[in-house]
Structures are given as C-alpha cells and as structure tokens.
Image (cartoon, rainbow, N blue to C red; front, top):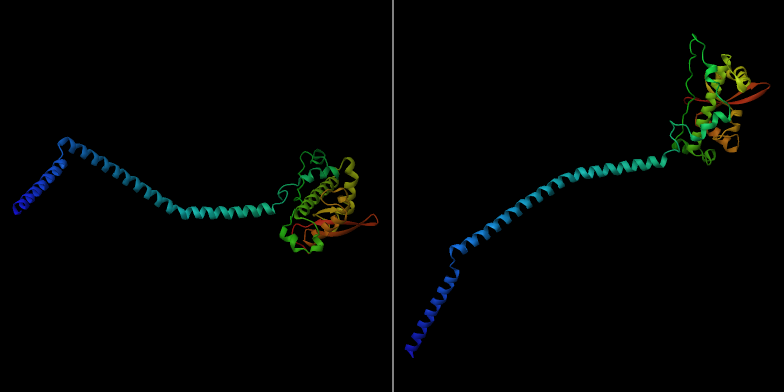
Length: 268
C-alpha cells in the first residue's frame, strides 16, 4: 500500500510539472507575435497621449472661459442698466423732441398770418442788414414740473400738449416780431399791412413788450395746440404758474388787450 501511495505521489508531481510546462509553452511567443504586441502597445500609448493633449486643451479652454466670466457678468450688468435707461427714456419720451417743431404747427403761420415777404423786407442795396432778434424762447416743461403743479391746475393736460402749445405760441410771437419789423421799416405789404401798422403803433411800443416776444390773446383764436376755450385758458394759467408766460394788459383803441409775454428765463 505504501508503494502504491508513493507511486501516485510521483505521478501527481509529474502531472503538475507537465501542466506548468504547458502553461509556459502557451506564454512563450515568437518574434512575429512579440511585434504585434509591441504595435498594439504603441497604438494604445499614442491614443493615451492624444487624449492627454485633448484633456489639456479642454482644461485650458475651461480656464479661459472661467477667467472671462467676470467680464461677461460686467457686460450683462451694463446691458441691463442700459435697458433700464432706454425703457425709462421710452416711457418719458414726448411725442416730438423739443428741438423739433411739432407736426401740428406746420400750418400755424398759414392759419393765422403770414410772415412778410422776404424779398419785400430785404434791406436795400448798400444798406446794413437789420439786426436779427433772437428766436422766441421755447422753454419746454418736464413731466416732473407738470407733476409739481396742483392737480386742479394741471387737470388732464399732458407735457406733450403743453410743449406743443409753447411751440405754437413761439411761432405766433415770431410772426408778430416779423410784422412789426416790416412795419417799422415801412415794408409791410399785402393784407397784413394794416395789422402790422396797428401792432407797431399800439402794442409793440408798450414798455414791457419792447424787445420781447409776445402773443396777443386774439392771435390764438384759430390756434390748434392752444385755443381760447376752458382747456386753453387752464393751459395758459399753468404756463404762467410755471414761469413760461407773463400776462400783460395793454390799453389800445379804448379797450384793453391781453398780451402774453414769453419769458426766456424765470421772472417774477
């Protein structure tokens, strides 16, 4: 029995060695197989290096974008502020800009009285051209000024309508100045000659009106932006309250004429 056990042990040990030799044989490769393995390893190494370069590029891009975030946030904040400014401007922008004439005033001169013909009022050859008077003041009101007035005084008037009235009165005042100047040089012609002479003799020489821009109440009877109705009189009262107009009463032809003096600045 001992002999059989020793034999089996020898056989088992021999079998183990055979198995190990077989595994070693399987692991042994020839030169061709080794070259294929080297190519695979080189390909894997190249792929890994390419991924490393790509990862580095991604990291650089993320870093640049992260550094740009504060600048982008500043631009966004500036755009939001600009948007708020534009919305505020759009919400308070008048129908027409103060530097421009209201479209409603395009026909004011034709509806009231025409400025004397330029050729007729031109200075003769060799004579010095008359000194031009400054245009009538157009001191437009702001929404804040209108809001500062009493509610009973402003009623339903808007800043746009009041500024349109200022424009219209300025046009009328300039027409009066032109007619008086033509009458003073004895150059008034046409249907306005009689009116021009009357203005020169009875109105323009009044102490408070000399060298100023003014509008007769009667000039506004055919007005478009301001009329002699209840709303128009409220508008004129508001303009006096805001220091744009001064009311002057001038006696002429046995009656008293109401004249509105356009103030270039706040006057008491």
